[in-house]
Length: 389
Image (cartoon, rainbow, N blue to C red):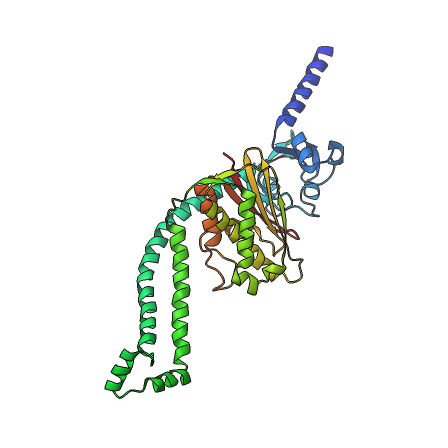
């Protein structure tokens, strides 16, 4: 009898050790989502002792809500009596989990409890998204280069024709005076006619539209063209400070967004090692993020206009954070923000290439990572990580 009890006790202890050895969050719940048993990973995630977890509802502790989460696999498991798995984005923790539920039956075939496993797949999803974006950017780069070259030719013709028309209507040019006299034309009267009919205004519109289109094409070419760029050693803090000087002298940011009156808190790690990079390209990325942050803050007129730039070292990685209190991005926007041509700005307000180019510079060329975090009431934070070696 003693031997049987000892074996049972050892078996129970072994099962407890096994249950707690999983790094995934493992819980046993009844059909009302009440927690019957949790492993150590669950306690660590909730930062609560075991005794304060048992007896509470899963959704109450993990999500801070009064009712079960939409799409929870426990619903399907209870209906089908079969295991079920779903990917769930946990807004509160800022992570993505693969959540699995499997029914455990009693002797009568009824569900006694449900085994619930939540595996953190955040990094795997980020890697999957980065690979997807990389493939998409590779395809779009080729298309962009071809389209850009095709459009550049007629744009050049439009701009050159506009310049020639203005030159040949100039009454001060001797050649124009000679030809006008030959045909009994008064160029000054022609100029007056143009002005009264606002034809000069339309000519300016043609030129400015062509110039704007050319700028977009230039952005496409910059996006698609492989840059050799010279890698050299740079102090990351100095690069960021230089970029801020450029941003504050940017005419558009000064006039339209009043960047000079925006508080920018700079927190730099003093002993940060130098990094090997293409300095101008890193400055381009930081400038893109600062410009986006300043524009986002302009949309939130009731928020405090304060941006944060930080650098610090984590292991063998140099980390840059650019944070602003502008409007928060929802999960859908965060997933698309590095896609080429994706923009949340109004039509004509942006090309949607800034962040995709930044992604290419950081991830493809410098073998680093760039990601975004955005939470209600906390604005948006872009995080760049670059290898120190």
